[in-house]
Image (cartoon, rainbow, N blue to C red; front, side):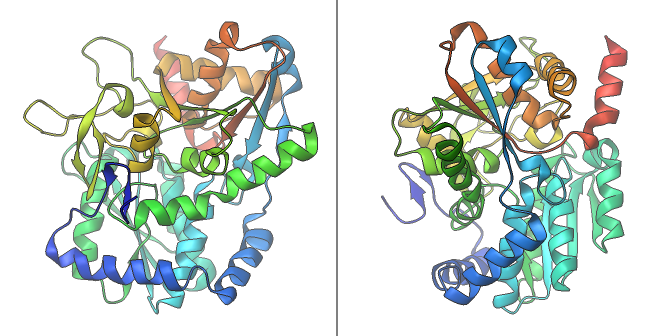
Amino acid sequence: MRKGYFGAFGGRFVPELLVPPLAELEQAVDNILPDEAFEKDMDQVCREFVGRPTPLYLCRNLSADMGFDVFLKREDLAHTGAHKINNTVGQALLARHMGKSCLLAETGAGQHGVATATAAAMLGLDCIVFMGALDVQRQSINVHRMELMGARVEPVESGTRTLKDAINAALRYWIAHQSDTHYCLGSAVGPHPFPLLVRRLQSIIGRESREQMLQQTGSLPDTVVACVGGGSNAIGIFHPFIQDTGVELVGVEAGGRGGPDDHHSSTLSRGTPGVLHGTHTFLLQSIEGQILPSHSVAPGLDYPGVGPEHAFLKDSSRARYEVIHDRQALDAFNLLSRKEGIIPALESAHAVAWVSESRDHIRPGSKVLINLSGRGDKDLDIVREQMAEV
């Protein structure tokens, strides 16, 4: 496999001015990440600051209703309330080893921004977060959290005012400030080496899950399910299971409102190959190659592209990708809250919804593992507003 590629997908399609910082980052990934001192720092931070390992939880009430065992990997219990912290503490430590003084980030749902601000505060780094103006409105609580920890939040008014536009703005800023700034990309997207770096840092989810399933049940899960926007939480839990061919991998994309002409974020299910944000992957694009607007009730899934490794897993048929609509995700949000006392992020609720919708097609007695990538406190205003419209 070519370096920087997953099959036909990946690469580094960037302006010339971004080549030097990406080359510097690639060298750091190759030389610093495997270093014993870095690994020791990372292990300590994950244990003492992030709170790893996160638990594996059997949903007894939900399992009784479904007719098969439903397990949750509780990334909602990691510090800041989502899986994003795994990536940001790793990249923040890497930035410090590289001699950078500022972390730059983009965010949609706000969780990556919060996690980046958290990591920056812990290590004494400056932090700047670009966020689509629409997401600033939808995720005001997370904006306040970022600012409380010293981050400067920059609303982006261009385009659709969501995650895609925040990434564009962050990349432009990085070009002008690359000497002292590390771009802490929040998902397994973008030019090489970002998809590889993010997957490496998020794979702790799958490594822990695999070990915990064997310890608690004596066997691996039959199916692993995770929501997919850019795809960091999904690739994090999928990757350690890829060689286990008896384990089915299911990624769940956001289908939006579900009307034939409505916007959605089902990139792998309904998109076509192309280049976005420096990588060759599946996109939502017109026949002319123009990026189409995306939509999801879950801000973190509202992205018209996807990580190139997911494109490869789809192309190779190692994973399959399904679609869940807004209403189904909202129903699953309520279902898990009432059945288990666990309020999921709307992103994670898409994965829960797929399991609930597929109950008649999952073999009784199976073991289904869902990556609960985040908690739902941040989404309560969205859910309240959506329920009022019913």
